[in-house]
Image (tube, rainbow, N blue to C red):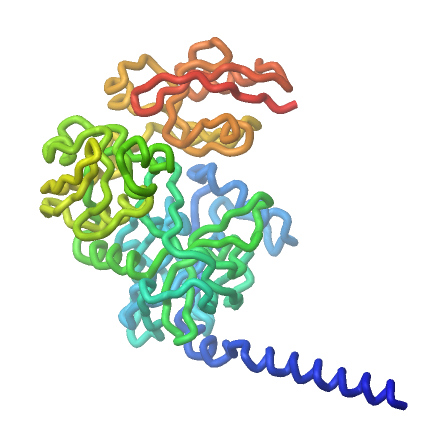
Length: 456
């Protein structure tokens, strides 16, 4: 009897503990009820002949779904999510959700479907501003991503895998994450969360517990193609700066310094006379750039930009990119162990559509080497005095393991000259499986050989 009473007492205590823990968990029901009406599904229609090769992996999911009707030559694809930011019809989503679309359809939870026009897009931040013809639409409330704390609860609403208006929750795992783009640019300090995000969630809102949008769900880190506990959102503070520029001029202007930077390690800090590792080490200054005109030099360590301390090199592009072009700012550097104060007039970052940053032709599909490639623009060939080659858009798998990065230009593969993407593919077919082959790359104007392991 005594043992039974003890077990019953322990059970009651354990139940009380679980009850207390459950009482501390947030209740998201009111938040969802107040905001779900302003979250939309974004679909696009695209002619088959103009399909972007980069969408094939996504479309493979829909081919495995039970067929609803015979596929016509052009049909809607449920690509992502979005949310209404003003009652007169402005909708925010990701650029990759609508890029290359012929028609865009926005579907609301009440089953209304409205055609949308693109007001403007920004590939560097992966944002797109849409407009539908409607009035008195339900809207979300915007918060401040700057006020988010690591460990804070957040919630996402979106359409993963086409399942409309799904809700997932988690916490903020980190802030200010640096995720260089396929062109090795980095202008978004991402919010990292463990909120379940999958294909279809892209462009949807990330809410705090006050029911305010603090981010736009954009991408995940995954080795399987599905959610693995690491997802990233664009801070709403950054997004609204982009929105304001898209509304006013249809394009986004960013500040430009014209330097190549690297992280300061402990050994580098000691060699440059720093008490501890911090700042952004300038490894190269572009000719005729704002940096060169301000007398910044290779070997300078930028430790402060416009009053903002630079702890990690990845922080500098965020500050520079958000600085208006033609602004004069104070920059503090360490040079030869001495602290110097410089005045820098920030320039304007060239558009992606320019020859300097956009290759000719669409990237090819990832190969078994882990490379997505594009032809090298004429301007880059001239700058580096090259006769041909291919530029790396994305590097994964064996290529990434060998040290090949986005932005590298490959000029030789296994002792053979590479002149184009087609030439690279032909050489790749002849590579010996299970062996390492030399690859000559150009990075920042410097040629380097790297050993590439060819899969079995």
